[in-house]
Image (cartoon, rainbow, N blue to C red; front, side, top):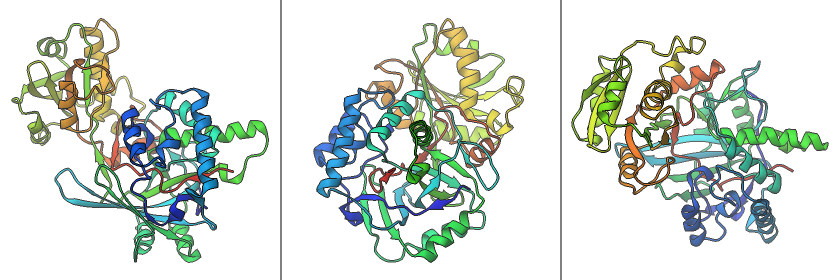
Length: 444
């Protein structure tokens, strides 16, 4: 692992107390309405800086980033934000409800890490796990150049097979947390500030030589690398700019939860469930599974006891459910023989390269791209179908077919990353998201 360090964070309220109204979810899960709701609650909410332009998936006007930088500096000068006088690491615990209603806790440590290019290397590397979009990187780069600050942490994982890193984190959580917040999804965020040299050294020793797997924040990490190149082209690079703020969580942490990212497909000129089934002949075996979409995941689990590749299908026009299995044991092997089997067996890869590229686009849409949305829950699938939520596909009524998947296994994330491969976009959703606004990392 690249070296990990304490850092002199910029924080609200001097790093202590309740910061409910000041923190936010990551920028990429907020739209204009979500930003307005947070700023109406408190004009000093971090989104006033972190989300100067919506949608953040594309580059905004220069004035948006200049305004964010001006707000950041005004808040520093007025004391709304304050830089800590000494470097620290921050133990971080999130308490949330699982899908079955049980209480779950996930613990990690906020640190800075040497920002090195992606890829395996001696002593540990930084390993991405999925492909990214270009637009968000342009937006984040413009914001970083303007503010000269990393506004939200990257979420990283490490193997921690001995459990030493997790023991340091949990051993630092005695007593009352320095900061607390509860976000709108119900997650409780608690932070303990660690300045003791012995605890910092113990954590550094526990992580020595380990890889970091990027769980969430690929765009943010890449932005930091691009920022270093930008500064190098201009001359000197401050030491702080060569480090990336991360929250690191051990892979054995019982609170490490991955939600599925289902697919809603639409905009296909020749689609009906009957035409889809005919086009899928020889590729998929499709069985009826009633009309209860909420029960489809259970039907998939039953089928998975006897079949290797199982997907759920839901036809919006007839409200019928189906369970589909692949007719071949390794259907992507011929096309992607060089990729690890874990990659070829990903549900999201099977959707992309079998359902979309071999069935929907060529046979049901005249070779044209289909529309997509990426819901995480069955409720969101239904909302997209009803028009209550438009999804990434855009526009009420675009939804024709939902493909319900299982969560991507954590072992697949590790295997694909270590093979120096990337999963398709939107392969994983680690829940809950890290809060933005608990720490800011100045790069000057």
